[in-house]
Image (cartoon, rainbow, N blue to C red; front, side, top):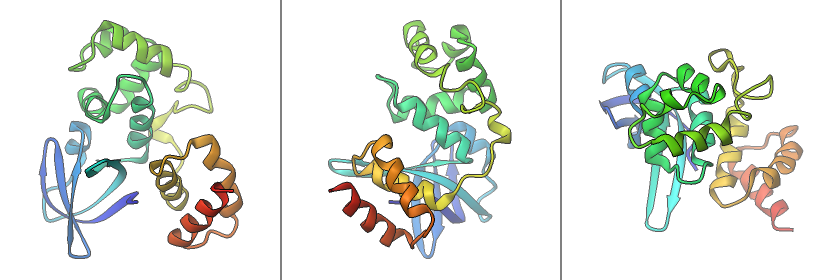
Length: 195
């Protein structure tokens, strides 16, 4: 699974970016928020990536920051919110304003997002306001500590293979001290998870 891309930005559009890494061009769907933070084509860029596996399709979603990717992951856990709607939400409001609206249960602000009506906004507030509050939530997104890319990539790979967060967490904890290369870590994690 792909968790991060660092390479040459070949082109950018409001809904996608093309990044060349090692001679391969990766097309990533992006939000308007990420689009606004991308440099001009020809410059180096780093995108946090969410890999989506569907029956006949492999898609990459690119995010300007780990915080944006974390919020995307929370949004798509809400019933009725798919990748497209989550990206629309991330592009309709600045990240801090979106978090503030969710934490404060500001339905009026959330209904400004295309595709989100009053009922959907209320559902988002109900399901996410608690998760975004307090010291353990995403409060203070802008000042969040840097994420561990190795652990993020391993977690993302396992969750994309269908394992749940609570099942993956203990396996990550056992591998964290050794930190084997990612392919080996995935193999060992799968072996542990299949017991």
